[in-house]
Length: 469
Ligand code: FRU
Image (cartoon, rainbow, N blue to C red; front, side, top):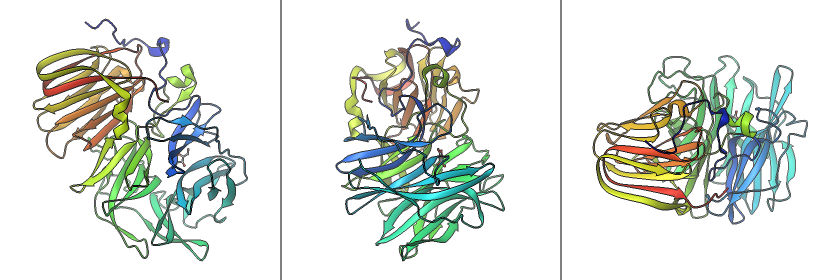
């Protein structure tokens, strides 16, 4: 029996702070989407949706973190507040664009008149990241044919042509769709709208698409988007709000796209949404997501510690074998010190690990499981020799009874697991970045015990050297 057990008893008397030690979380209030993720003036800039007043989805500001290595983040005093007529009910999500040394931030101003909602796509510029000029809405009219849910601009340039993807909802079907807008002669014009004929049982459009992103990896263009309100009926697609991508062919002269793949999830875990990508000066692409969902249950930190939600770690993206691979950025591994290393494990291995830890299991050849916790309250990762992996976070979640997620490996086997634990979250990288599964967990005590059952060539257990946020 492990001396420092996790308990399945109510966690409202937990004995330590759940604030993560290396994931970005708000010191107080509620955080949601990453915004304006970019490389500017020699650093990575990561704005985020933030209600600094309380843990409700109201009063959305932008906050800011900066980092030189995508791992050690420092919160900056910057706040973009909903204080104009065109964003009075929230400075909603958006993206950054760098041109001629100037930072442009595009975001959605959310305005409500009772039940009526209006959306304004707004521009803010800065030469130094300290002083910001607010230019207001890029256009004032509301787009015909769509409800007031038009938001989350992703602005990019192809061959000198500035374009924007926007998430929207059609006013007839109340269905989600992506809009392509182009700037011509100083005006923004709607070029087209797109949705994928996803072959899912009900309501094929979902009721809303959110947070589009466009990224080109090794000449393959991907359109990322979050789809709400689809009951897929598929075991690997169980979240109520999905975050994924389509492969697309893009006509560089018009920006028009055609879809060339099905919708693929970016993360197969419990909480992952509204991700943003960015490219650094040497062309490497990174992605960060919100480790939360719009429709997820209240998390216990809200009442007990006054903060809510966190972001995932930055992940390095590669395109290979017609697949998106996501791996922890290299500097992540420098955060940890190896505490235990075992080789040729057959059968059973028990261990202790800190609440902020990294566990690497290499070459798994049979059915097996990795259990973090004890019989009453544990994160249980189970796999079989056909490449089917499931995660059950059971009573550690404190978030209802929807406790399991599944992933079926495209390689038909599980060869490597890299599990990152932070005080109230985990990210599991499978097969060197083939898939990631993320989620939150709320344990009563900070020190975990664990066990590995099965066969592995090697297992290493690492502890975080020191908090970095
Ligand atoms: C996604 C989202 C965005 C919106 C923002 C508001 O989580 O709903 O569509 O811009 O959050 O906070």
